[in-house]
Structures are given as C-alpha cells and as structure tokens.
Amino acid sequence: MNTIEKRECLINLANLINNISDEEKQLILSKIPRVDNLDNYYYSYRNNLLLYFQAQERNVPYCTTVGMVKSWNHIDRKVKSGEKGFLVIKPVNIPGKNDLFFFGHYVFDILQTELIKTDDLNDYDYNQDQNFINTFYLDYE
Image (tube, rainbow, N blue to C red; front, side, top):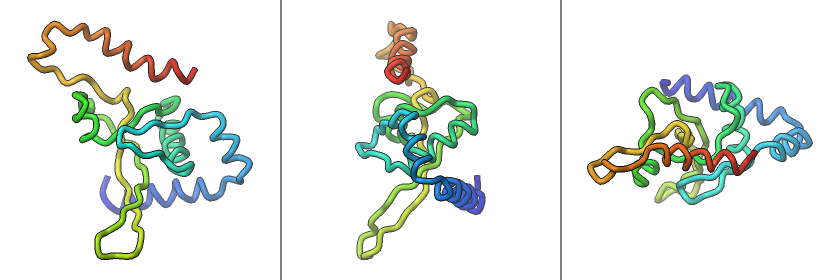
C-alpha cells in the first residue's frame, strides 16, 4: 500500500468512526475485547475501533494481542509471510517541535505470527505454540 492509499484508508476509517454516535461507540466497545499491545501502551477507543473495523473487513472476529514486527521478533515470533498488518494511529513527539504529530503504522495480531525456529527449539512441541495462541482467544469467549 503506497502513501496515498494509506492516507485514503485512514481518512475513510476516521470518517467511519467520526460518524458513529457516542451511544453506538459505547455499544461497540462494550462488545469487543480490549486489544492488548506488546509495545507497552494502551490503544485509544479510536484505535480499538480501527482494529475492530479492519478485522471485520477481513472476516477476522477480532484482534487480541497485537504488536509491530520488531516487537514480535523480540519475543521470538515472526510475522507469517504474506500477512497484512492492521493500521493504527500513533501519536509522536518530534524533538524540537512543540506539536504532537500522528503517524499510521502497522501492527499484527498474534494469529498472524509463528514461532521462530532455532536450534534451541529442536525438541519443542509446536502444538504447545498453538495452545499458547488459543489462550489469548479463549479468554475473550
């Protein structure tokens, strides 16, 4: 997705969220699980809604735990080949500027990742990995 497509996607999603009444937002937020983040911050209700709408668009029930590629790699997981990230908005303070800027970046749900196979894991039971992933989803059912 190039920069123009990314910007249009953000504008469309922002318009969708901005056109929802406060009552509808609260109803939707009460029905979807809060998304956990590997990067040690909580998503705003708008980012939770962005994740929810993108998941619905892809026929994924919801996201549970998301992180950037670097974050997944840090805990010995990698994003599966061909997976498309979920776009979220991140506020950023730029040194020397007094303004807060917002940038879009992509995160990936745990279902879009797999364990990085290393020599240390030759005897690892990969069914345990699937059980690990399932615990994230079972907590929300």
